[in-house]
Image (cartoon, rainbow, N blue to C red; front, side, top):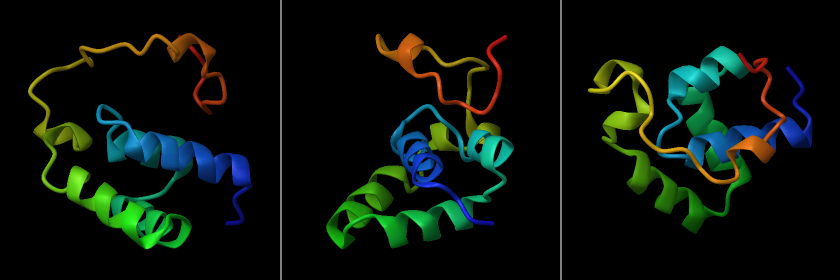
Amino acid sequence: MRMTDRVVDRIIEMAWEDRTTFDAIEYQFGLKEQEVIQLMRRELKPSSFRLWRKRVQGRATKHQAKRDFVKGRFKCTRQKSISNNNIAKR
């Protein structure tokens, strides 16, 4: 599957967000966790990738099954302006 730069940027943005799970990325873009890791390794500078991996490794909020809450507790002030999600607003 050929992804546009905009889609790749959105996946990277979602991967950096603490509260966005790998399940959400898979649901929107069809990429499993390992594929997201490969994309991040390919698209980021080596130092940025290492920083991201260190940050994400073992983080319960990145895995839906490990979360101890149903909905996220934080809403970014910029959230309304982000409109390039593939899922329609409910």
